[in-house]
Image (tube, rainbow, N blue to C red; front, side, top):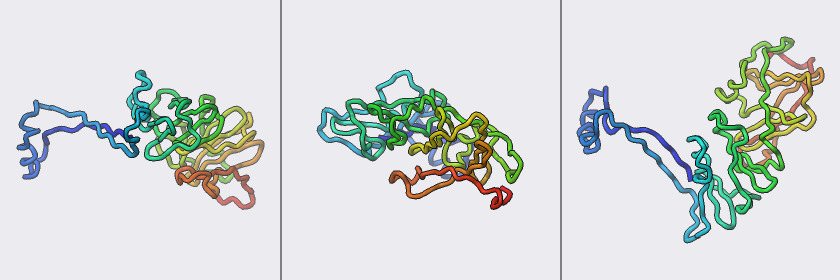
Length: 246
């Protein structure tokens, strides 16, 4: 089930054409109070378990959450056989052990990352990523362009990755691993993080300087899942002799 909430006014103001005049003669407008604004909630069911007493949604499972978190909870449902996210079954999820979690906190900048857990397995966007504790995920802060071949960096703050979304995900770190978080999963590069490491982004992509070498975060094929929003990434060492100014 998906939930779409929005406000709507029964009357039109500031429109002088005939359509606006006719709209304001509607029963909804004539019976409305001055300045009335209606709160509308549209719910759509993509998959329904008919006559099943075990069918349940998750939106009431935590009353302390904010609006965006309630909307995420409403995207999940379960019966005794399976768990569903939006319009598809979550492979590998056990409804007896399943829960929707918010490992990054309450800030709504994280609202596009839907995270859940079943036993020791974590899911992002309904895709299994293994036994990964995303509570340990730490954002990597971008630096200014380091010179060399890089002179057109466009991300100066971590919030730029959330605001623009040009790079398809969020770079971070879990322990000694570099992690690229996407709406459909993660790409993890074990042991690649180092104390002197820094990261920066240009219009061409995301780059790292690790142990004296430059690396680019590039798309690779094939996709690890059927979700095209979750392309596999690879850290590719850059050959200085072949790099054009970026």
